[in-house]
Length: 233
Ligand SMILES: O=C1C[C@@](O)(C(=O)O)C[C@@H](O)[C@@H]1O
Image (cartoon, rainbow, N blue to C red; front, side):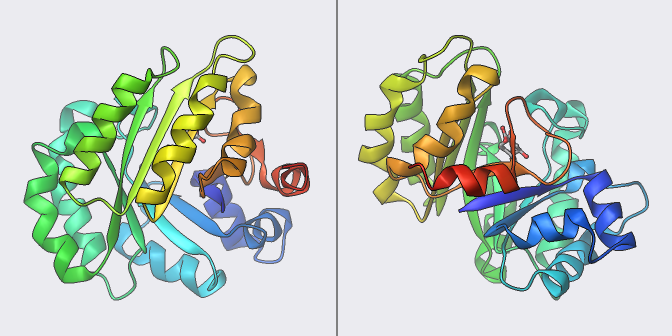
């Protein structure tokens, strides 16, 4: 699945021009990630899923409030303030299908929301970002165990590549672990990690992130190009 990321600019462009280039790019996506932390100020977060679902009814919706620490815009020191925001999103009439919860949130934030997840029927994926290096299999194993312990429906790690080929050793790890999750995403960020965003799908991952406009993370590929290149795998 190719997931297009909705940020402030793409959200506004879709609003202003529902048949324009960005909206057309979003139509190519199997999934759309609502990056609440990147939305324009003043947008009511609990209404966004309804808006996006209305425009792109076939796309799986993933909701994310990413902290600055993990590459987002939400202030890291206000991390726990996301509890009320998630509760609002989870109790709206139309909700995302999946919520992205960072592995670092499993001890404190997640337990406060576990009941809301089960009541709302919204599934969740446990995610992790390493902006320094390619994760080791030991680190990933540990994250997988944490995700399984909370019965996560999905797993994602985006780690940073710095040399060509440094992600190669992780493809067998993907093949081994992806079948245990409904959604599985493991790839490398950065220029030298670009290939892994699509190649990981050939090894059993079923979710990767693409840009609808500007890249929101290092090495992100525009969805149109990703769609064409997918044929090579
Ligand atoms: O975790 C990810 C992956 C990502 O960081 C990327 O590298 O494409 C983009 C984020 O929006 C998403 O939540």
